[in-house]
Amino acid sequence: MARRKQLYEGKAKILYEGPEPGTVVQYFKDDATAFNNQKKGTITGKGVLNNRISEYLMTRLGEIGVPTHFIRRLNMREQLVKEVEIIPIEVVVRNVAAGSLSKKFAIPEGTPLPRSIIEFYYKNDELGDPMVSEEHITAFNWADPLEIDEIMAMSLRVNDYLSGLFLGVQLRLVDFKLEFGRYYDEEEEEPRIVLADEISPDNCRLWDMATGEKLDKDRFRRDLGGVEEAYQEVARRLGILPESGPRDVQGPSTLQ
Image 1 (cartoon, rainbow, N blue to C red):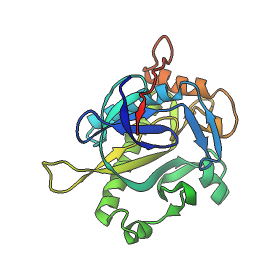
Image 2: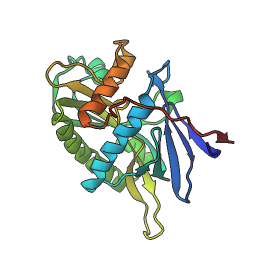
Image 3: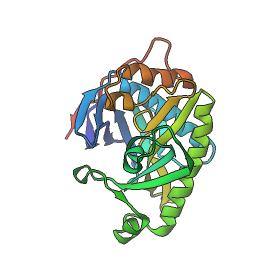
């Protein structure tokens, strides 16, 4: 396997220098974390499945005009993406009360919300990813008001599309997390806001419409068991699980 320069390693992915200027190789790991890295483990085959699921969802979003960093999948664990400047904000879109929202406001989990709610969190593990307001974001120059408006509009559009897509395979999109970045195109004067990171059961809460069964990382967070099977079921319903099951690919050796 070719040696590549490692640019960054996060909790679920490793970024390597891409083969062409302005590109990055995103490698999906099997590592799993929860509660701001307090709980750690491994979900066998998670990286393979998340790579395929994120590829599928990013491609579908691109087809309806949502700009993303995704270029193409390279193999079972890697995809080629555009190099972007990540905005240090996690955008959470909520459709149904669950997780921290239920705990904060004593709302029974599973309660439909009167409308979709967008929350912002500052990406900082050491601080516990604190919730922030638009005022914080603009005051600390993480993004300007126009960028925030664009991020909110894009997040709601993603929510509308994915809610319908998952509904079609009998899954309820309870909530999910998005990340965005600035893409600098030589042909454009201003950077474009694009959807970045990934969309997978790692950052989406997905419940079976009939039974309410959780088919996402909550199975790991809450020690429910059957984590690998839940991820495979999501891929199966989307029609992207290989018949032979999730295969593996060895990661590239790292050139520091």
